[in-house]
Image 1 (cartoon, one colour):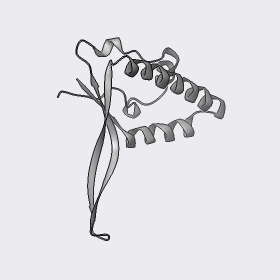
Image 2: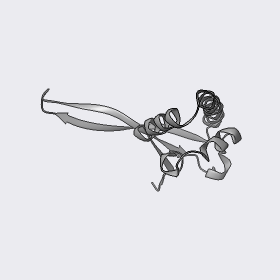
Image 3: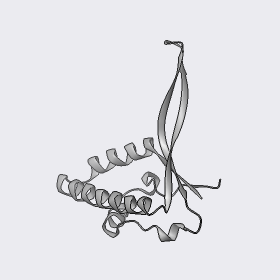
Image 4: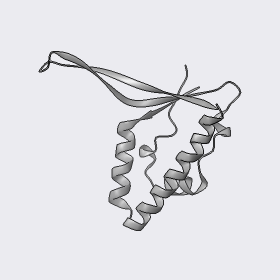
Length: 112
């Protein structure tokens, strides 16, 4: 299974949180987000999944050159690992319930 994280969506989420949470809530959200990232790093360290960058090429006529941009990443689950085995930090999950669904970047699934 391959999950996609789009950096543009992450930027939209960050902007929404900054605009809609109080400074104290924003800090609590960021702390929970950091704990969630550390949790997911342990999953990666245990070889539950690998991340691969998603690269997009764009030709820019003004420079007569093509540039490559990393626009997100894909998470490829190891054999025998199901999405239900990779939980999100509980406090971070609570914060995400306050965020509009369309801004949550953790649930897009693409079949390989």
